Length: 149
Image (cartoon, rainbow, N blue to C red; front, top):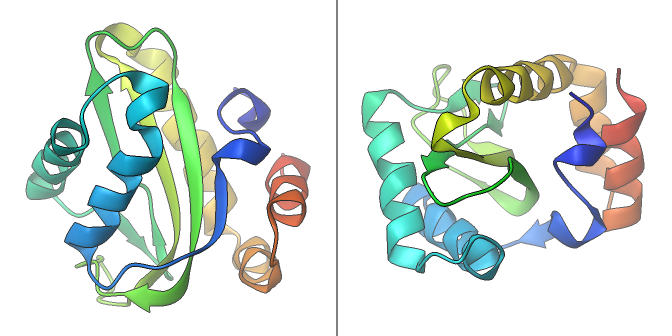
């Protein structure tokens, strides 16, 4: 699974503002509503429902919220770097500033898991996370994300 299949320059948001986890998930819904043809409240609801199962805040300032939608025809992603970290109920209780949203079709199964695994590997590397935190535009972030194997 290549990351370039999940994101593009248009799906990278380098300085987004959010004051809470709930607001962040709603903002993510706003970003992808036209792309997946779903209303913001439905997207946010699916993401919040997933969060109830356990936080997608994986530690070290990183969150990977994800959800499935029956009418979606392909896996898509959005990368967000917040201007200020927000409390996300992460496993390490640290605030989050790097977010990779992953949305998949209901039947994506193995492909969804492969995409989650790829994203997790990228964000486990602290050097990559620091580079992302230092990047200030979509081009730089896209290059960093796609340079990691």
